[in-house]
Amino acid sequence: MGTSVTVRNGIDVDQLLGTIKAIESDPGLGGFTFKATSTWTEGTHSVGRIQEFTHAGVQDTSRSEGFTLEADEPPVLLGNNAGPNAVELLLQALGFCYATGYVANAAALGLEITSLQIEVEGDLDAGKFLGLAGPRAGFTAIRAHARVSSPNATREQLEDLCRHVQDTSPVRDSLAAPVPVETTLQVV
Image (cartoon, rainbow, N blue to C red; front, side, top):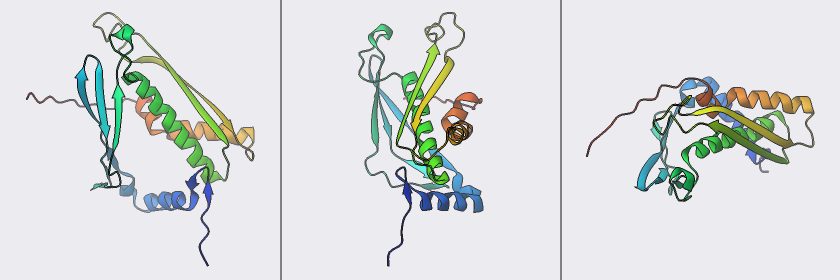
């Protein structure tokens, strides 16, 4: 007789709970180093490549192909719209992170999600980026709005879930708290 797997919101709940227990037992298993490479092509257009990452000190080999992303600027910022710009990708990263947080945490709580949409917008003054006066080079405010439907969750459960997702989101934490960024240069 086969073992029954509990899948909720597309998440294997048994595997999720097993991962949580494993990291709880050995916190070193929670360590990851992710990597992205950007190569400039022309103008404001660049191509990004994401493939390898390290988990618990070991190179992951699960991605045989990797992912390619294109980034550009809109014409008003000297680009050709060959892709979203970097700050739009940052907003999208927050939306993706929130979505994962919602469905995985809901699954662990026994809550079904039938629809979920995360809308993220941010305000930015390009002056500083262009070498002019400006409040800062980055966003001055970011707003996220989630629309979620669940047949078996109360409004209070979904509000608790929303707070939990914000408190545990790696992308939100990286945006909201200072993160040391070290940049080096190799002249070739």
